[in-house]
Length: 426
Ligand SMILES: Cc1ncc(COP(=O)(O)O)c(C=O)c1O
Image (cartoon, rainbow, N blue to C red; front, side, top):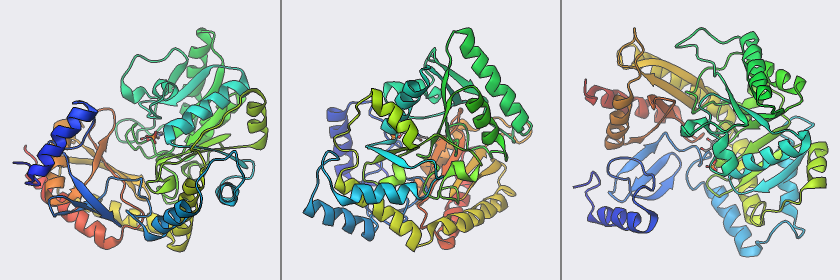
């Protein structure tokens, strides 16, 4: 019998495999069958409610009424594409570009984070005339062919035009200094040159989720960006994870002191409505558009723009960036207190409402607790909370609750985590 006890769920899982393939990815031994969401809560077909500390897409909360109404109203009025004129695409581009540095003043609208990164990569190659790309160790940037090449986290044969830079890691090795970052970047550029490939770009997720959610030292990304610029490359800030207040500031690159030439957005940008954005400078866009005619049918359609505008409204009206900062700090305080009595927790990291818990079987050897992390995810689900895992050894518990999470939710979550940790097999 599945955890949710429903024969409908068993049938649905079988039907899903029939029409979507047996290997279509899913979470949990018994896939969770969901019916609706509200705020930080997801409601299952089993009649249970789950505290959602995993999903960063509904960043202003599941089914936020302001976003739902904005989408519904726009869909009832007009939905078309950017080859026609309508107000809200321009309004949205203006609102978005007002949140980034002055030189980033134009937007290209697409449908997902992968597509945004793919387009950013096309722009970088066209503008520099080069073909080399630097990424962080074990980075994840998407599912298009270009996205997979910039995603060592997939574990595929490294692409010839891509080199990795080591991610900072103050738990397992000494804190990486900006000087080390510069030398690692120069080494990676030199490796590309040995293969007669010059640098087009460096792309980085400021949250560095798949690299283990490390605490990125001050000056680290700024030092890399300067080295990239000196070598003639462009800097792409992938804000798909870190954007819209996740780290306690509107943008991760802004918080970490990095000046990008291109910013890419996805996931939280439409609070669940599919939307991706590439923000860059007018000069870069003009150079690209002089050579490439790019048009996305759905990118920037009026309904997507209404969703995007509504997300910005809620972030501002509900002061969610401040909440991300303060509630995130409270979350880490509570997690560190828990770590004092739970030896499986080796390290607690993160910023804002992104937290990473590195789980180890032994605090001396820091051996990754991969199997225990997998088991903990199941136990947390059984006990009523959803979390994720990430990192090279899939042993880092990844917490990314909606930005409307309160201290009371954190207390409830930490209680569920404490109960679940006790149940993990030793
Ligand atoms: C940092 C980062 N970039 C890009 C992507 C790809 O976004 P999407 O799945 O919307 O294509 C992801 C998805 O997890 C991501 O984490």
